[in-house]
Structures are given as C-alpha cells and as structure tokens.
Length: 287
Ligand SMILES: C[S@@+](CC[C@H](N)C(=O)[O-])C[C@H]1O[C@@H](n2cnc3c(N)ncnc32)[C@H](O)[C@@H]1O
Image 1 (cartoon, rainbow, N blue to C red):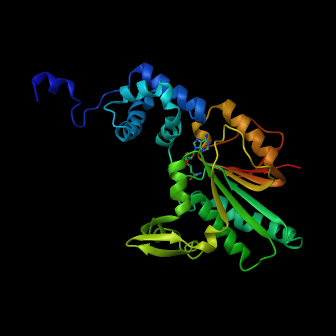
Image 2: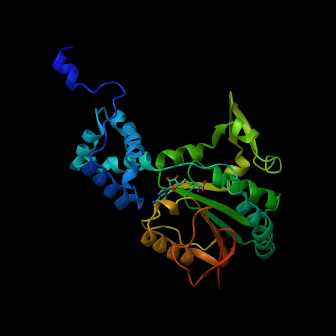
Image 3: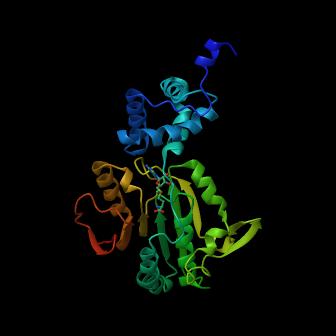
C-alpha cells in the first residue's frame, strides 16, 4: 500500500468521533422515530452502537453512515438504526416485587372473578426486550393458574426492536441464567435443554404469550382492556411529554382496578387523576 493510501485507509480499530452535527442528526432521527432521547455526552456509546450498522452495510465510518441516512434510499434503514441504539438490558424476575404483587394480590382476585364467567385476563409487557420479563409473567401466571382451564389468560409482549423480539420469541437462553435464579421461582420457569449450555422455555409457558412489534410512540392496534401493564425501564429514555402521552393511553387501556408497573427509577411525569400509587412503582387504575 502506498503511503498516501495508508493515510487515507481507516486504521483497524481507529476511533473516529461523531461530529456534533452528525450526533445531533442521529439524535433527532432516533427521537422522531422512537421517542428515545440521546444526550450529547452519550457520543461514545452511540458511535459504538452505530459501528454495527457501518460494518453490516460495508461502510467505513459513522460519518459515511450518517451521509447514507440522509439519502432517500435509507428509509428501510431506520428500523435497523433503532434496533442498534436501543438498550435491551433485562433479567428474569427483575424487580421481583412486581411478580410477588402479581402472584399474591392480583391473580388470585382475577381468577376468582373471571373463573366463574370463563372470563379473560390480559397482561401486557410493553417493552419486553429479549423476553425475560414476559416469560417471568407467564411463569408466575402458570403457577397461579395450575391446571385451571376456566379462564382465558394471555400475555402480549411488545417491543420496538425487531432483532430482540426474534430472540425473545425463540425463548432460548444460556442455561446458567437459570442456575442463578432464586430457589423459589426456579421451578415455575420451566425449560428444556436444546443444546450445550442452552435451554428453551417450555411450550406450556410459551403458548400464553404472543410477541409483536409495537412502537410506544405510534398508534397501538389493541383495544384492551388490560388487567396489568408492565412498562418498566423504558420511560427513562423518554422525555416528559412522551411519557405523559403514553401514560394517558395506558390509562385508556387499563381496566378499572388494573395495575401499571413502572421500573425502579421511574415515576409518573406528573400525578395522574386516574392512577393511584399503591406500592413501590405500582399504580392502580382508579374506577
Ligand atoms: C432496558 S429494556 C427494559 C426491558 C424490561 N422491560 C425490563 O425492565 O427488564 C428497554 C426496552 O425498551 C424498548 N424500547 C425503546 N423505545 C421503545 C419504543 N418507542 N417503543 C417500544 N419499545 C421501546 C427497547 O427496545 C428495549 O428492549
């Protein structure tokens, strides 16, 4: 390689910062399409996440990727951009108190009420990530249901990220995750071995669930009502205005007496006339 070519070629592992303009451009796109606020100090993290797309498209830099996003041909790239920038951290039985509340205070009452009328119980995991949250709901519900077939219980699990939804739907996880679970919940979350070091959630739990792509800031196709909505650890990425608009829509879909669970560091952007705080990040929809 000539000296000039060597100077022009991107060096392996070279870190090229996102310019202020490109960072602003990416932040605007992500906010517009997902409601996620990317702050300026997250430049290194954002650049790291975009590197995946740079490589997949055979480009050489994030600057080139930003230039591509400005072309008309880039429309189909937007979902990939969103997939790349989402934070999907989650865990089975994360924030355990919600599952305890569901098991002890919510499901027994719903089963008593609905069982007599062969009624429906509907639960929505609205930012379900790789599935640990909705499978934990399914495990809790299955334990409460036992062999009862007098109720129709279904869990809707949605996320904006199509890559993570595929993973969630497959229901395959490293076996070691299950070894670390608290001993009492371990028997509820039933799995079968599928390969070395990997297990799959059993069909008996998977059939309670359906995974769908849903963007919380766009139109929702469901009409509800839901008895419980999990919206955990996604509000932290939204601004006040986005949170307030989504909350209003949650309230519209929640059955009176239904519950909304938020993440550990989240709260309502402002008090809501139809939501009453009844426990740690647990809100009840008032009649
Ligand atoms: C940190 S994970 C939380 C997972 C789980 N709820 C929990 O608490 O363990 C946040 C999830 O929110 C999703 N998300 C971000 N923006 C979204 C939007 N506008 N609509 C739907 N999901 C979104 C991300 O794709 C990600 O999977």
